[in-house]
Image (cartoon, one colour):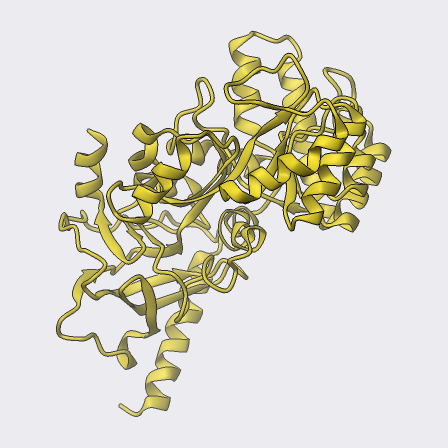
Length: 415
């Protein structure tokens, strides 16, 4: 068969698969049990054969594809008919399964015991939102292969005003001290500066200016003394938990639609991102038996929808490691909450992959399955564009080029 004819055949198969991906009726057929249990080190080539690749840029599917990785990098992606598999590669039969770029949890509080649980849930990268003194050594051990865990990008310890709520809080009460504090964060290797609730307005303004002067962004909570507009004007890059939008979604009152739309437009215009963490607040409201739970949940989802409609960028984060939020397993809940807010599954998966990579500044290396990108990939039993729940139990995870099938990961996390 000529190359042109082979490509034409592949295109016809792709069109058929895309038609099947629509919600036109008929339950998807479950693939055969995935029996692979061999952990394969990154020093050995791995080839996924007959996989369907899920595009995180446009939500399309590319069926009958081969993906070859070598030493932590994707080196080839192409149709099965025209992409030879090296004889020395570990062959993963991915027929009837789906390849998705590694997922990113953009709001966690990292603990060493939890590291494998993120990986087992297909989470290959995390953004840690409170830098503790022990974390750099842990990250070093992960990067050296001594610990199984995701890639880690971490904010600094939280910067707050007294009395403080959490361990290792850094207090900033004298605005002139902000520059020295940020210099310390730069020296420690923190990627972002974390702001918190009780910072005074002068201290917050000084912190954002010092961070900008040293090439860092402020992320985290908008302090109570600071308005959303002030935070946007001072360049806060990410806003956690939809803080600052309370005037629109309230604590039980009706949604202020006009205010919300105005705030969403301002957010988009300033290039700020939001990490809503919808699941954790719903959990808190449920635990506390809050009578306004349903109203607050509905209104917060409306904020997410308004931000999406305005073109403001969204991130997927769980707050795992905080109280009752389970690392790894809570990620599915957050994805489904984002979908319930009105995002399409393609939009949710984009936020969880290439969107997160763009925020982290690694879009040239992560977030899509393409030659030259990092070999962080998740193999799924079903089409996640139809069934978001399938991300919760991947058939296997490729992390830094190391193949970790489900049966192996189950032994690691004790299931």
